[in-house]
Image (cartoon, rainbow, N blue to C red; front, side, top):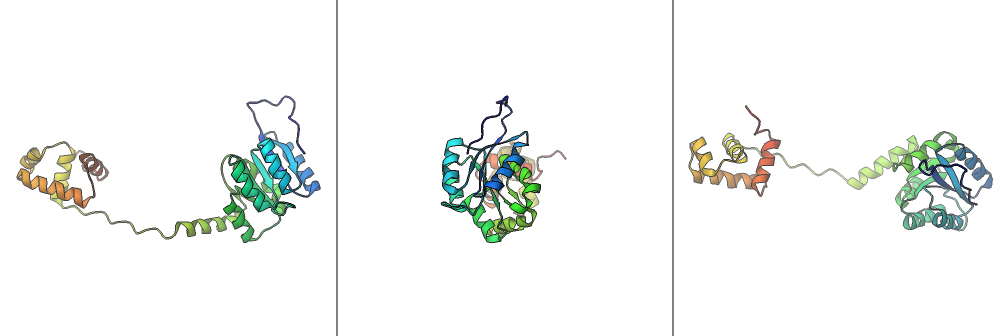
Length: 230
């Protein structure tokens, strides 16, 4: 079922175009009434099963699909996977009665942009649609813990950070002068060293700091605050 374009609808004020996919006609009618009452939303179609939902996604190219997980012919999760493949720009928001974490995890893994329980639809649905349309993710507060836990598992333990190399006062002096543009001979005169000794310090610094060029030395000196005026 496809909704007509509203008379006088400004092209520049394009509302969020929504497809409702649920096998309960009464629920679809109630959702359409709720959403069409919002000035920034428009229901462009309804689907009573997964196959029809996929066909309408291709035909209408909606911004957001409200998708039930329990759907005849093609189930919600399979429909979600296919929608993400054929229309990556379409955001899919799961609207379901299933509160189990397993369903939530499967939906997120399949590419859902959000997960709203039907019992909370009157409170959360409008905010959820706007959030996913902006590119965000929407979850009920009780479900955010699941998302954080899964992301933490994916990242794994943080690798130990390499300790900052410790430079001797003389190494810092040589580094500072080289970063300021001194030649080895000029730095040697400034520090009362031989040019060869300065070159030795320079090579040691490059190895110790894992740097390759003079530009890298300058960047490092800036980060360490060695080029600030005393």
